[in-house]
Image (tube, rainbow, N blue to C red; front, top):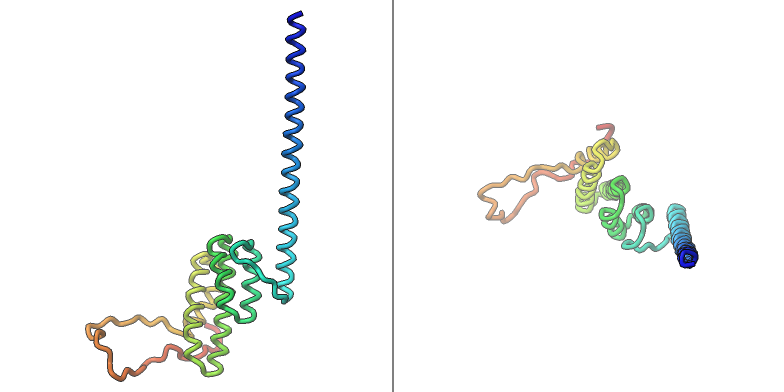
Length: 198
């Protein structure tokens, strides 16, 4: 009799454990379903926002919370309109959170946008505005090349930018402590727009 009671007790315990396991499995599967549903909806909203940005619609994006592809799409939208200052926070966030390939593309796009603006300024004769734009573009091309040294487009565009504004070494002399009363600019930083291939 005592063996029968013991077996019944074991069977009741096993039945209770099965019930608990089934309940735990149900709760876990419900949780996984909820998370995957949320991820699906979030991914769909992100893709919709990217499509709208590519189509030219102005979609506001929180740079601190956006995914890397959304950062890239918003940055590209702003750069097509020459809004460098507004695009910079997206580039900064991409540096922290995006894959290196996405960050390199964003650097390349930012540098290209600055170069286009610089060429427009040169055509208008506004060299003072063009020089800093080209200098920033060169820095961004170099940063993109540090990520992907084989990127031929960045190399080529950096070469063009280097021809526009030369990186001349600064001579350090003993007499630099006293500035000239009437400094003359003997060498221009911007020799002209290069023609043809490098």
